[in-house]
Length: 276
Ligand code: SF4
Ligand code: SF4
Image (cartoon, rainbow, N blue to C red):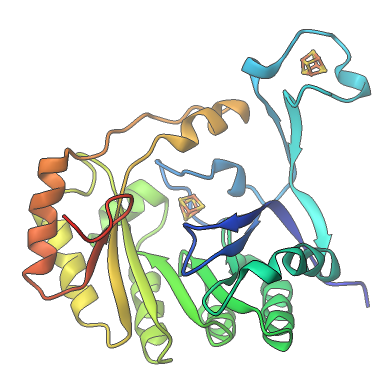
Protein backbone atom coordinates (compact mmCIF):
# COMPACT_ATOMS: atom_id res chain seq x y z
CA UNK A 1 0.00 0.00 0.00
CA UNK A 2 1.31 3.47 -0.89
CA UNK A 3 2.11 6.06 1.73
CA UNK A 4 -0.83 8.24 2.74
CA UNK A 5 -0.47 11.76 1.32
CA UNK A 6 -2.44 14.96 0.80
CA UNK A 7 -2.03 17.90 -1.52
CA UNK A 8 -0.84 20.74 0.71
CA UNK A 9 -1.28 24.35 -0.41
CA UNK A 10 0.76 25.89 2.40
CA UNK A 11 2.07 25.44 5.92
CA UNK A 12 2.17 28.52 8.11
CA UNK A 13 4.45 28.44 11.10
CA UNK A 14 3.92 30.16 14.43
CA UNK A 15 0.43 31.39 13.56
CA UNK A 16 -1.43 33.41 16.22
CA UNK A 17 -4.79 33.63 14.45
CA UNK A 18 -5.84 30.06 13.71
CA UNK A 19 -6.99 28.90 17.14
CA UNK A 20 -5.69 29.11 20.70
CA UNK A 21 -1.99 29.74 21.39
CA UNK A 22 0.83 29.46 18.86
CA UNK A 23 -0.03 27.08 16.03
CA UNK A 24 1.22 25.53 12.82
CA UNK A 25 -1.52 25.77 10.22
CA UNK A 26 -1.59 23.13 7.50
CA UNK A 27 -3.72 24.17 4.53
CA UNK A 28 -4.88 21.24 2.43
CA UNK A 29 -5.77 21.96 -1.19
CA UNK A 30 -9.33 21.16 -2.21
CA UNK A 31 -12.72 22.42 -1.03
CA UNK A 32 -16.26 21.30 -1.89
CA UNK A 33 -17.57 24.88 -1.55
CA UNK A 34 -16.86 27.88 -3.74
CA UNK A 35 -17.59 30.97 -1.66
CA UNK A 36 -17.79 34.16 -3.70
CA UNK A 37 -15.61 35.96 -1.10
CA UNK A 38 -13.16 33.06 -0.60
CA UNK A 39 -10.01 34.29 1.14
CA UNK A 40 -8.06 31.18 0.06
CA UNK A 41 -9.08 30.63 -3.59
CA UNK A 42 -5.86 28.71 -4.15
CA UNK A 43 -7.27 26.06 -1.78
CA UNK A 44 -10.44 25.33 -3.77
CA UNK A 45 -9.12 23.12 -6.57
CA UNK A 46 -7.81 19.71 -5.44
CA UNK A 47 -5.09 19.86 -8.09
CA UNK A 48 -1.77 21.75 -8.26
CA UNK A 49 -2.13 25.16 -9.91
CA UNK A 50 0.30 27.72 -11.25
CA UNK A 51 -0.04 31.17 -9.73
CA UNK A 52 1.37 34.14 -11.61
CA UNK A 53 1.99 37.28 -9.56
CA UNK A 54 2.45 39.96 -12.22
CA UNK A 55 3.81 42.49 -9.70
CA UNK A 56 6.82 40.23 -9.04
CA UNK A 57 7.65 39.47 -12.67
CA UNK A 58 10.87 41.10 -13.92
CA UNK A 59 10.27 39.99 -17.52
CA UNK A 60 13.46 37.94 -17.73
CA UNK A 61 11.86 35.42 -20.15
CA UNK A 62 13.33 32.38 -18.40
CA UNK A 63 9.99 30.86 -17.34
CA UNK A 64 10.84 27.47 -18.87
CA UNK A 65 13.87 27.11 -16.57
CA UNK A 66 11.93 28.03 -13.45
CA UNK A 67 11.09 31.41 -11.97
CA UNK A 68 13.58 32.79 -9.46
CA UNK A 69 11.65 35.95 -8.62
CA UNK A 70 8.65 34.19 -7.09
CA UNK A 71 6.35 35.53 -9.82
CA UNK A 72 5.37 32.11 -11.16
CA UNK A 73 4.85 29.51 -8.46
CA UNK A 74 3.07 26.18 -8.27
CA UNK A 75 0.57 25.94 -5.44
CA UNK A 76 0.02 22.41 -4.17
CA UNK A 77 2.61 19.86 -3.10
CA UNK A 78 1.87 16.21 -2.44
CA UNK A 79 3.21 15.63 1.07
CA UNK A 80 3.51 12.51 3.18
CA UNK A 81 2.58 12.34 6.84
CA UNK A 82 6.25 12.18 7.79
CA UNK A 83 6.99 15.35 5.84
CA UNK A 84 4.15 17.26 7.50
CA UNK A 85 5.10 15.94 10.96
CA UNK A 86 8.65 17.14 10.36
CA UNK A 87 7.28 20.68 9.88
CA UNK A 88 5.17 20.42 13.04
CA UNK A 89 8.05 19.18 15.17
CA UNK A 90 10.05 22.30 14.26
CA UNK A 91 7.37 24.43 15.96
CA UNK A 92 6.66 22.13 18.90
CA UNK A 93 8.84 24.11 21.38
CA UNK A 94 6.54 27.13 20.84
CA UNK A 95 3.18 25.39 21.36
CA UNK A 96 3.13 25.58 25.16
CA UNK A 97 -0.03 24.21 26.75
CA UNK A 98 -2.57 25.67 24.32
CA UNK A 99 -1.05 25.66 20.79
CA UNK A 100 -0.44 22.93 18.24
CA UNK A 101 -1.66 21.89 14.80
CA UNK A 102 -4.52 23.63 13.02
CA UNK A 103 -5.62 21.48 10.12
CA UNK A 104 -7.28 23.80 7.63
CA UNK A 105 -7.81 24.36 3.93
CA UNK A 106 -9.73 24.05 1.80
CA UNK A 107 -11.54 21.24 3.54
CA UNK A 108 -9.51 18.63 5.46
CA UNK A 109 -12.35 16.10 5.13
CA UNK A 110 -11.54 15.64 1.44
CA UNK A 111 -8.41 13.78 2.66
CA UNK A 112 -10.04 11.66 5.39
CA UNK A 113 -7.29 9.07 5.68
CA UNK A 114 -4.46 11.59 5.76
CA UNK A 115 -6.29 13.95 8.13
CA UNK A 116 -7.15 11.18 10.61
CA UNK A 117 -3.61 9.83 10.55
CA UNK A 118 -2.12 13.31 11.02
CA UNK A 119 -4.39 14.02 13.99
CA UNK A 120 -3.49 10.64 15.51
CA UNK A 121 0.23 11.27 15.09
CA UNK A 122 -0.14 14.65 16.78
CA UNK A 123 -2.06 13.06 19.66
CA UNK A 124 0.67 10.44 20.06
CA UNK A 125 3.34 13.17 20.18
CA UNK A 126 1.46 15.42 22.61
CA UNK A 127 0.65 18.08 19.98
CA UNK A 128 -2.67 19.96 20.29
CA UNK A 129 -5.19 19.49 17.50
CA UNK A 130 -7.59 22.06 16.03
CA UNK A 131 -9.65 21.58 12.89
CA UNK A 132 -10.93 24.35 10.65
CA UNK A 133 -13.77 22.88 8.61
CA UNK A 134 -16.61 24.00 6.37
CA UNK A 135 -18.66 21.11 7.89
CA UNK A 136 -19.67 20.37 4.31
CA UNK A 137 -18.86 16.65 4.21
CA UNK A 138 -20.68 13.38 4.76
CA UNK A 139 -21.12 12.86 8.53
CA UNK A 140 -19.49 9.41 8.38
CA UNK A 141 -16.39 11.03 6.87
CA UNK A 142 -16.32 14.13 9.06
CA UNK A 143 -17.18 12.75 12.51
CA UNK A 144 -14.06 10.57 12.87
CA UNK A 145 -11.96 13.70 12.26
CA UNK A 146 -13.92 15.89 14.66
CA UNK A 147 -13.59 13.28 17.42
CA UNK A 148 -9.81 13.48 17.18
CA UNK A 149 -9.68 17.24 17.93
CA UNK A 150 -9.34 19.44 21.01
CA UNK A 151 -11.23 22.28 19.37
CA UNK A 152 -13.15 22.81 16.12
CA UNK A 153 -13.59 26.07 14.21
CA UNK A 154 -16.42 26.17 11.68
CA UNK A 155 -18.45 28.71 9.76
CA UNK A 156 -22.10 29.52 9.48
CA UNK A 157 -21.88 31.55 6.32
CA UNK A 158 -25.60 32.16 5.85
CA UNK A 159 -28.62 30.90 7.74
CA UNK A 160 -30.88 31.02 4.68
CA UNK A 161 -30.42 27.83 2.62
CA UNK A 162 -31.05 29.51 -0.74
CA UNK A 163 -28.69 32.40 -0.07
CA UNK A 164 -26.11 29.97 1.31
CA UNK A 165 -26.31 28.13 -1.99
CA UNK A 166 -26.10 31.35 -3.96
CA UNK A 167 -22.94 32.53 -2.18
CA UNK A 168 -21.12 29.24 -1.55
CA UNK A 169 -22.44 26.85 -4.20
CA UNK A 170 -24.25 24.57 -1.72
CA UNK A 171 -27.13 24.72 0.74
CA UNK A 172 -26.60 24.73 4.51
CA UNK A 173 -28.66 21.67 5.59
CA UNK A 174 -25.66 19.32 5.76
CA UNK A 175 -23.62 21.95 7.62
CA UNK A 176 -26.35 22.45 10.22
CA UNK A 177 -26.76 18.68 10.62
CA UNK A 178 -23.01 18.29 11.16
CA UNK A 179 -22.97 21.22 13.59
CA UNK A 180 -25.53 19.36 15.75
CA UNK A 181 -23.48 16.16 15.57
CA UNK A 182 -20.33 18.09 16.44
CA UNK A 183 -22.05 19.62 19.47
CA UNK A 184 -22.97 16.15 20.69
CA UNK A 185 -19.26 15.24 20.92
CA UNK A 186 -18.53 17.66 23.77
CA UNK A 187 -15.62 19.33 21.93
CA UNK A 188 -15.29 23.14 22.24
CA UNK A 189 -16.62 24.91 19.15
CA UNK A 190 -15.73 28.30 17.74
CA UNK A 191 -18.54 29.24 15.37
CA UNK A 192 -17.83 32.02 12.92
CA UNK A 193 -19.55 34.12 10.30
CA UNK A 194 -17.50 35.99 7.69
CA UNK A 195 -19.54 39.20 7.43
CA UNK A 196 -19.87 40.87 4.04
CA UNK A 197 -21.81 44.11 3.60
CA UNK A 198 -25.04 43.57 1.68
CA UNK A 199 -24.64 39.77 1.51
CA UNK A 200 -25.16 38.49 5.05
CA UNK A 201 -24.97 41.46 7.45
CA UNK A 202 -28.74 41.90 7.79
CA UNK A 203 -30.46 41.68 11.20
CA UNK A 204 -32.40 38.58 10.15
CA UNK A 205 -29.34 36.54 9.25
CA UNK A 206 -27.27 37.50 12.30
CA UNK A 207 -30.28 36.92 14.59
CA UNK A 208 -30.73 33.43 13.11
CA UNK A 209 -27.00 32.73 13.51
CA UNK A 210 -27.09 33.96 17.13
CA UNK A 211 -30.06 31.66 17.87
CA UNK A 212 -28.11 28.69 16.49
CA UNK A 213 -24.99 29.72 18.43
CA UNK A 214 -27.03 30.06 21.64
CA UNK A 215 -28.37 26.53 21.19
CA UNK A 216 -24.87 24.95 21.19
CA UNK A 217 -23.87 23.36 24.49
CA UNK A 218 -20.16 23.43 23.68
CA UNK A 219 -19.80 26.85 22.11
CA UNK A 220 -16.58 28.55 23.21
CA UNK A 221 -17.57 31.74 21.44
CA UNK A 222 -19.21 33.05 18.27
CA UNK A 223 -17.00 35.18 16.07
CA UNK A 224 -17.86 37.75 13.43
CA UNK A 225 -15.11 37.96 10.81
CA UNK A 226 -15.10 41.29 8.93
CA UNK A 227 -14.68 40.68 5.19
CA UNK A 228 -11.14 41.18 3.91
CA UNK A 229 -10.33 41.26 0.17
CA UNK A 230 -7.38 38.89 0.71
CA UNK A 231 -8.60 36.48 -1.95
CA UNK A 232 -8.88 39.00 -4.79
CA UNK A 233 -5.19 39.20 -5.70
CA UNK A 234 -4.73 35.45 -5.18
CA UNK A 235 -7.67 34.75 -7.52
CA UNK A 236 -6.09 37.09 -10.10
CA UNK A 237 -2.81 35.16 -9.79
CA UNK A 238 -4.82 32.02 -10.62
CA UNK A 239 -6.30 33.74 -13.68
CA UNK A 240 -9.74 34.08 -12.07
CA UNK A 241 -11.83 37.09 -11.24
CA UNK A 242 -13.17 37.63 -7.76
CA UNK A 243 -15.60 40.40 -6.89
CA UNK A 244 -14.38 42.91 -4.32
CA UNK A 245 -16.93 43.25 -1.53
CA UNK A 246 -16.93 45.49 1.52
CA UNK A 247 -16.92 44.86 5.23
CA UNK A 248 -19.76 46.44 7.20
CA UNK A 249 -18.92 49.73 8.95
CA UNK A 250 -17.78 49.78 12.60
CA UNK A 251 -21.19 51.22 13.48
CA UNK A 252 -22.93 48.28 11.78
CA UNK A 253 -20.69 45.84 13.65
CA UNK A 254 -21.74 47.49 16.92
CA UNK A 255 -25.38 46.89 15.96
CA UNK A 256 -24.68 43.27 15.02
CA UNK A 257 -22.82 42.78 18.29
CA UNK A 258 -25.89 43.99 20.19
CA UNK A 259 -28.05 41.44 18.35
CA UNK A 260 -25.68 38.62 19.32
CA UNK A 261 -25.19 39.77 22.90
CA UNK A 262 -28.97 40.06 23.41
CA UNK A 263 -29.01 36.24 23.01
CA UNK A 264 -26.34 35.87 25.73
CA UNK A 265 -23.87 34.45 23.20
CA UNK A 266 -20.15 34.98 23.97
CA UNK A 267 -18.92 37.09 21.06
CA UNK A 268 -15.69 38.14 19.43
CA UNK A 269 -15.16 40.32 16.41
CA UNK A 270 -11.96 39.29 14.65
CA UNK A 271 -9.29 41.94 14.91
CA UNK A 272 -11.32 43.82 17.49
CA UNK A 273 -11.24 41.38 20.45
CA UNK A 274 -14.19 41.44 22.85
CA UNK A 275 -14.24 45.18 23.45
CA UNK A 276 -16.95 46.13 21.01
S1 SF4 B 1 -15.18 27.08 2.57
FE1 SF4 B 1 -13.35 28.37 2.89
S2 SF4 B 1 -11.79 27.56 1.45
FE2 SF4 B 1 -13.80 26.71 0.83
S3 SF4 B 1 -14.50 28.15 -0.76
FE3 SF4 B 1 -15.39 28.83 1.20
S4 SF4 B 1 -13.95 30.36 2.03
FE4 SF4 B 1 -12.88 29.19 0.39
S1 SF4 C 1 10.79 33.58 -15.00
FE1 SF4 C 1 9.47 34.63 -13.53
S2 SF4 C 1 10.22 36.74 -13.53
FE2 SF4 C 1 11.04 35.76 -15.39
S3 SF4 C 1 9.51 36.23 -17.01
FE3 SF4 C 1 8.97 34.22 -16.14
S4 SF4 C 1 7.46 34.74 -14.55
FE4 SF4 C 1 8.54 36.64 -15.03
